[in-house]
Image (cartoon, rainbow, N blue to C red; front, side):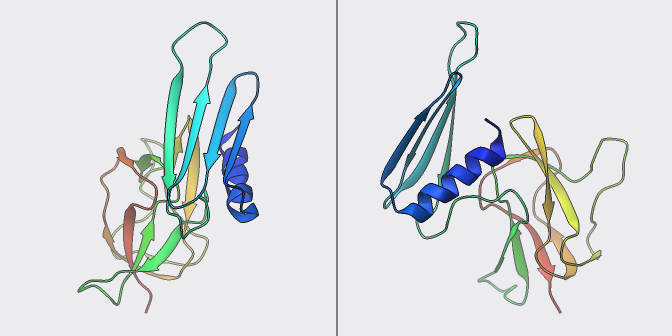
Length: 161
């Protein structure tokens, strides 16, 4: 089961109103619980008798489950209120470049339009391109290259004007 299938399952459960769903397959166990604290647990059991790896991802109760791309864009409630924050749609490792020998996707001052790739986030050995949902100019990059990011963590500030 890949990351997109897991995320689609989370969205489906969130929309269905079910309080708990358990799914067990050969090498994957997934438990999705909804309510005041929406939590998703994913356990992958390797074929060998190695220790079980567990990954937990928390999603806010008011929002539907995570999306891989495009990234969520929400207004900032601070002195930079004219700027829009682009947040991480998934947990993973943030990369500004498509590969180490390539240039960065965007710099401060770069004009972007809807659908432009801003960065990649590696999650479970999959590289997910994060696309912009808005047009504007990059004002600030909030995360260092090769840093771990959490769900809904601010990545970029964009001036939409």
